[in-house]
Image 1 (tube, rainbow, N blue to C red):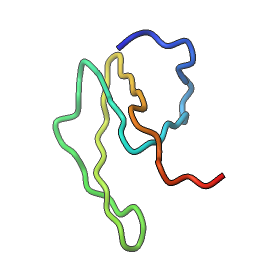
Image 2: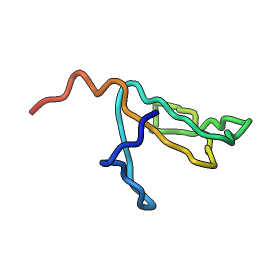
Image 3: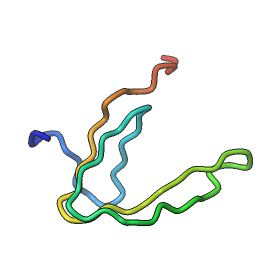
Length: 64
């Protein structure tokens, strides 16, 4: 992944999209299930060591 000048690097910064690529040197080996809303579940894990994420595909049904 190329170095991006517009990378967010502060604790709590967020990126969102339909497709996101994540690269790191030390991925967590265990994905954890959590309740995202009353009807939806999701998975998450923590990646460490030079972790970077890039949005590959933005949300397609955004209303302006």
